[in-house]
Image (cartoon, rainbow, N blue to C red; front, side):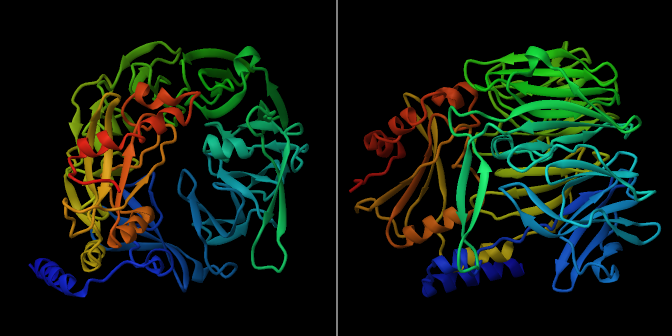
Length: 581
């Protein structure tokens, strides 16, 4: 009731205030910043959650139970550590007795960074620094007794019992050789930074070596707080130039020996993904050719160093590269593919023989959340409720008992607990900002609301933020999703200037049933000055199937221009009785 009175009051106030959005509101004052959840971690061995809380006093890890409201305990508090004042990242060992915390993070490229990292032992209450310098990508071994990390293009392993550090590569050199960390191309285009992985027995590390000696250098001035700019020189292959030469290596901690794996003709050009299976001697490796239309899945035997081809996918265009490879207890695996025209999930046996297609339909699986071995249930996000929406579903491994878990239309995403009994759902739409709820994974029912953004919604009413209207344009070239923002006092008999925003990189999406982002708020400032803003996702954009997305392959810019250069059908199909000016 109180909320209703508040909204009514703000509607009345807004009609008189006529308050407009400014650029300072968006970019400086964060007037429209949404409240989100702090970094959190579902505990591996219990249905509890760890939340990282950062304030002016430092950082802490707080433990919460799903069953009972309120904090259970403080796992770690930087005010009690002595050596560090705060931390900005954390990682638990598999038995959750140790925690890696990072502080003084320093960004390198878009996804890479380095920091000072420490290990905190929950039993001894002791904090120990992993290395005396900033390092990259520290990773616990599965047994929690060792940490592998990268420093100055080489890999190291620290034994947490003896404190001894072993350097396992020695040829790393800036702008020449990189061990275990990706080059710029992989970080930017394949979305990965760490290129090393522990096996299940904690006695082997697989890593990729990048030889970028022949890659042309790019020089860029870096402007900061100093009087003169600094300079960054890094390897950057432009189109047609030489890329890094990559090779796969295995390091055996028992013998202290590193071996190169000969992938033969199956190496192709890229090694964008690798993952150990449940068998500690079997490494799964994905390779791609430079055109990215021929992808291999290989299994490498770490004892013999022999690689065998398990799956091969070819496409007339590029192949979608995902992170969905998941090994089940019997070492069969789940894999995603667009081979039937839409991205779906498939179940293969340990030899690569297809068992069954798990999901089917003229819609895309947009995220894979995991597999519950006890109930034989797969959890995923999809666009089956419309390409501008995202919903959460569960389905049996054999493709039966499909169930929609998300209750509200719009954009839903989920993070599941380790037991797959619970998940945190994030929902937003063009009408409602982000709401975070704890949900029952078997039914989707909301157990409790964790956080909402009612105050933000009230603020947008006060500022009279124009509504985002989503519709579908029916054209001879397909159905195009359209988003439009019009002045609140829009009159179809008047003429308005039009801004048509366009970005349609392969597989992208600019029109979605989700809350406002910075670009939307900027567009809103224009609409408040009398503009109309329109966005159309034409051919080449994502979530409408393989053919729609890959139409622009090898001819970027052709269809995108065609789909946005005919104002007649644009206005006719949008049913606006006006001129474009």
